[in-house]
Length: 264
Image (cartoon, rainbow, N blue to C red; front, side):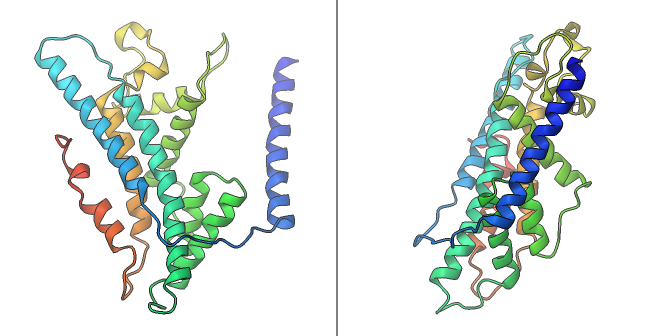
């Protein structure tokens, strides 16, 4: 009886969410966006913070091994997951805002700086934000408007989805009762199969999924997944005469913090 009630309640919740999105899309009108005179790309700093956590995790494990230590966990693995995921959400929101700002404030002196595809991608992100859609939906919609819709079955997009789901699992963590599984368990198993997270059979099979994520390899994966999906979207931004996103492109492609595991 409990199983049927749980399934019915789950279906009910999904139906309510679906209906809400339909109502938002059909019955509510998003107000026109009014942009400020400048926008800051805090997303880059957030991603660098995740990479710093990755570097700390690597250094901690290296120092521990050199000193003959036996500990295998580094909490910076968790930090890297949460912060890297946050950076992807900040990036897509700031990208849309930056494009909208340029359209609003630079139309007179640089009318060709923003292509129709860039404008459509920005508006799509604003629409999805208004409808409280997920960050993964924003990336798919933006990539589609830019002419290169992400392959949802591809490794780049799938790693991005797993990163966001794992971040959500960590942020909404709760004790697991007998007979239940946490949403983070399955993703941790995948990462363990890839030799990134600690395998279940290691350390006597006693570590919960949260602890098994605390490795330098998991931190590397989280940071790489976040930067890769961002670069994949930037790859779709066309070159224009004014190149309003040139500094952003250069930052994500060439900053030393993304290249060196010894950078601090």
